Image (cartoon, rainbow, N blue to C red; front, side, top):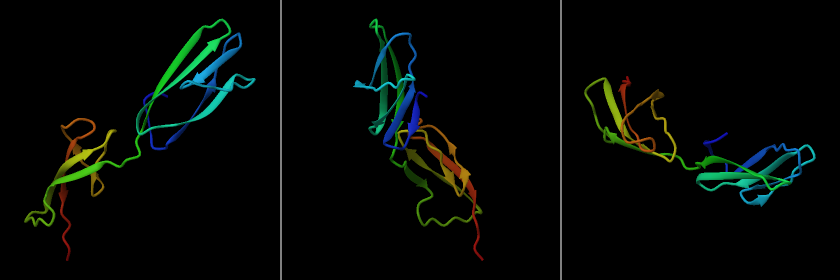
Length: 139
């Protein structure tokens, strides 16, 4: 698959190359071992952020085909900022609006007390969010 988001630092790339002649292949410039059934499998290390994986297969006549895929490694939790209410705020109503921003290199989903917050402007990696909540009264 292309444009995959993962949180593990190594990735196994595998597949099958078909051609009538003998084929050689490289994965990110490193020679691959191709099995008798023309399959290959190799594990590569990923760097944080966007990684481009390039597979180049070349037949006996020198014809080459390149396939590229994008994989994003995201091992960092989003940064969440609550802009309102301020910590320790006392409110007279049973409902309260909670708002803030979430920052990450990938799309984020924010929930407040298990309820999805409405994402607003700020872009995919830094959306503003807001959620209205019924306040629970302690007795």
